[in-house]
Image (tube, rainbow, N blue to C red):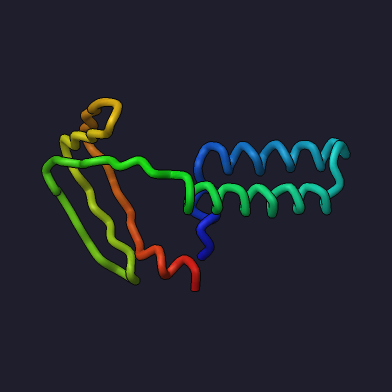
Length: 106
C-alpha cells in the first residue's frame, strides 16, 4: 500500500476521481491525461503529507475496544476529546485505524 492510498478514500481523493471520470466521459480530457493528473496529484499529496504536515493532536476518552490484526491497530473511543493548538472538540464515538508507516513503503 502506498502513502497516497490513504487519501484516496478521503473527500478530496473521491472528488478528484469523480471529476476526472466525468471529464473523460464528456471527452474534455483523454484517459491518458487523466491518469497523468492522478499520478502527479498522488506525488504532490505524498510529498505534502510526508514533509509539510506538522500538526499534533491529543486524544483522550474511554477506550471501548481495541484490536491488532495484520499489523493494523483499530481503536474505538467513546467520549473522545481531541485537543490541538487551535482548540478542543468532543466526539461521542470515534474509530481510529492505524498502521506502521514503514509498511506503506514496502
